[in-house]
Image 1 (cartoon, rainbow, N blue to C red):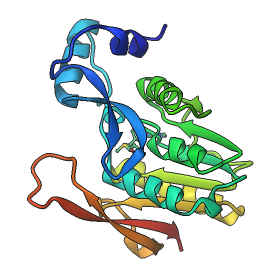
Image 2 (cartoon, rainbow, N blue to C red):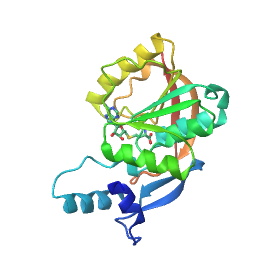
Image 3 (cartoon, rainbow, N blue to C red):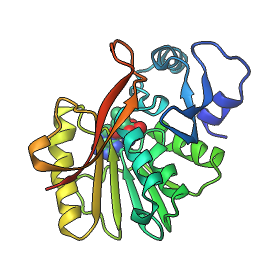
Image 4 (cartoon, protein in one colour):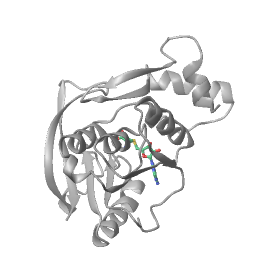
Length: 219
Ligand SMILES: C[S@@+](CC[C@H](N)C(=O)[O-])C[C@H]1O[C@@H](n2cnc3c(N)ncnc32)[C@H](O)[C@@H]1O
């Protein structure tokens, strides 16, 4: 049993726990999310006695929600395709791709907790997703028909590696889609608009109940 499986089967429902919720903008997909990711993170670090990566997989992100919605509303993009969900986090976009009829879905994330979370969340949604943890960004995405990446332009160093990877995949014939709410390192002038969605905000300290989120492809 993985550490996360023990977490979700342990009794208790406080702020430091995970719980299953329907994703606000994609209610077809249910996910194990933290009631409060910061509090969960603090408890897990205290228990392990060392620093852990920020549990991005324990929250829903605006970019991932728009992208997952787009796939479910346009199954013709997905059905029968081999899909790679890069920086998968909770696995929301990967699970949406599986529900939309992908022939194979790989979810990749360098955080081992995210790999475990994707596996758990795929099981909850009764779909097959292969979760992997290696860093793919310096390689080429082979055997991928559709490459999706939700909310990956929040960090400068990651963004600098991400765009070339996505562009190489597009040049090799993959359909490449990203979902992004206008993060600080989004190379907007290198991407074309595919669709936009008004996504309910789930992040704290915002003053509007929805935010515009774009689905984009490399130019
Ligand atoms: C803001 S979260 C977005 C998660 C998911 N795509 C979504 O939209 O819900 C960003 C994720 O990128 C992952 N990540 C960071 N660097 C990565 C890399 N080089 N390769 C794969 N995943 C990476 C993090 O571990 C984190 O889970």
